[in-house]
Image (tube, rainbow, N blue to C red; front, side):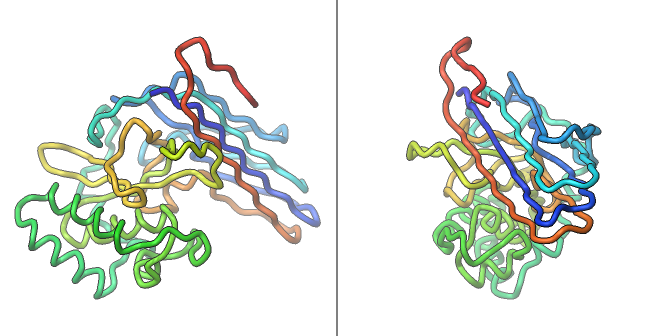
Length: 278
């Protein structure tokens, strides 16, 4: 599948900020099942973008700028994907999978979650893949997608208790429960082509990957109740959202900050038919 993706983030500061530092993880990489055919990143200032790869191999840009009252960050490109049945191959894995058993503040389990994971793990026995599929389905059924009650700092246990949240919360709950069941799991940020024909979205997408011996990393999108397909475009990974967030940063001075995000994901035509719509 050919996915055309555009992601725009705008900050407004009133009064102007005296300085900003932003870390961008908005550039995808190629691997088996995903080929980045075209990609560009633009900012509204004349800031220099210092590019490097972080510890997990994510392409990272660092933006710094002096006084400003508005900042727009726009990425756009074309990604060609293939359905691999959710199995990830061809990535640069820099750490042993056991690293992804490490809990974080956003992925800690509470007693209810630990019991939830323990019962599913016991039912699955030695079938790790079966445990993960059951976990994904149970989270999908337990939760209601709702943008209001949670934010980027909401932990897995908080969202699990609320039984409501967004894709980030679903992913954190899956990761926390998988790790509690002894299975390495990590957070993935990216984009998703919706099946209902809606192309304009208010944010990017998030899901989880879990490690299965003799199979490797497998993608689980609990918010949609499916393993990852060619409708998913993978951008960055981390122990939780904070390590894979599209944009993280800070500002100095200034007053009220207003943030708006616009994402568009649509299926592109045959090679040669795609044109930038920036």
